[in-house]
Length: 225
Image (tube, rainbow, N blue to C red; front, side, top):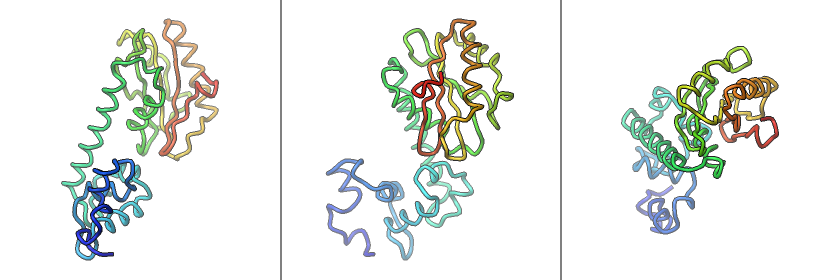
């Protein structure tokens, strides 16, 4: 593949983004803009394609640990730091978008935010988004870690955090590191137990989201909340 400087200008990732928008770029083209330069024997597009092939997807690349990231030729600690900063800015941007609105008016954005928080984690994490009477976000907290099941998720802790935040409603979520977002029988049991407990303090359980690498399943949409 020829050097990028020899490509027709309209096919170069940067110019393509400026002319057609970021959504027109492939994963490797987006990564190429982030990397900026290739390595000896590979232009930046070839390097980007090789990196994505190695990790399997952009999301897997984003979830890589520092040692996993830095072992790839053409990457390194400086790029790892830059990537983490970009990811954090993206999460804060999404968080700011949902902070001043009724989250129930934009469930897709809530799914996107929760997925950005939980995707790629190597172990299961159970989190809660605490909301006020207008369904605006008060706080997002990770509460339980490890295998999420009926014995590891304690409703009293969720209730305590709701009371601490003076929350009127809550959306809970957890990830499936397996990559399969289908709720388990244990997930349904946890949801029902939480709803029963939260009803006692007049806090509404609006949803339980199950996050996998490429999908977020709403248990409310399935009728399980």
